Amino acid sequence: MSIGKNKVVTINYTLKDEKGMVIDTTENNPPFSYLSGNHQILPGLEEKIEEMIIGSSKNVVLEPKDAYGEYKDDAVQKVSKNEFPKDTDLQKGMSFIANTPDGKQMPFYIQEVEGEDITIDFNHPLAGKKLEFDVKLVDIRDATPEEITHGHAHAGNGHHH
Image 1 (tube, rainbow, N blue to C red):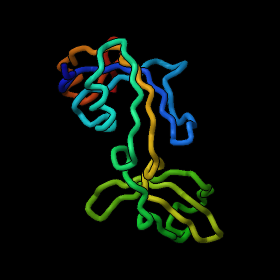
Image 2: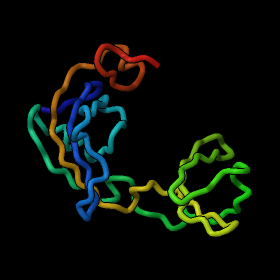
Image 3: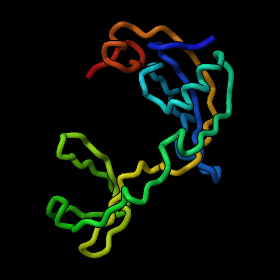
């Protein structure tokens, strides 16, 4: 039986890269909840969770194309330090958001700082990586009308914006 759309799905998970390094986990934290069918988690992961029953666990491995995409070399650029706000202490790993001419926002991070040359990367930090999720399905419930309107799950007794 499929979970379907507009259910609040609660999971515990550990996300590891292909070398087994933990990238993210709910261990020692509250479980993670999302609104099903609303593109809030990776589609390949959501598809596998759809097959689960409450209380069950599953190991899900996603290839890069099914996760954050293949790494694209042409998404890496060198720009001048003066393209950034003056007096910003630019460091490797810092993230920013660029606005495209048509008004879209594109996140990027600094890959390298070499004097006045800054190498920026528009790839998602997990692009090109095979990802492994250990997932336990904790709960499924109908979303409230408010959650459906807001487009996300609310924790506990409601949600304040």
